[in-house]
Image (cartoon, rainbow, N blue to C red; front, top):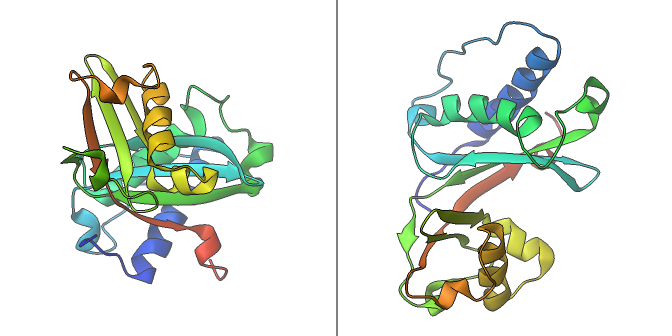
Length: 188
């Protein structure tokens, strides 16, 4: 992945997520932050993921680069905490338990053969008509999946049969992600 962030930029984004969620929970006006660095003005796809005791608690993202990274992360903090349809909105009592992870995505690359997919490096997007599913690179690693299982699970995420990746109407894309979390910075 060519795009990089230094440790100060990563820490800033992680604090931005925590502050944004806290302000929302406390019903304080959300603060428009000035840009921390020129790098954070770069438009990137991104995801914000929340865990509590190692269990997923919310994950929402932008697959494509529609906003500057700093703005995207602030938006996604609210979405991951309060708008992930798989979970109820985050409660004040849970706030101190969340662990925050951010994934910054590279542009999508069309896959012409599954040999191009490298588990642990790539995330996947599978599209067929109105159906679309995405799994971040770390998901396959966390579950110990091979390439075939990763493809099947991404099909399931899209609401498609497990073998839909073999259908000529299905498009497969891969991407990489720069992944960092609060756990990477004990001094945060």
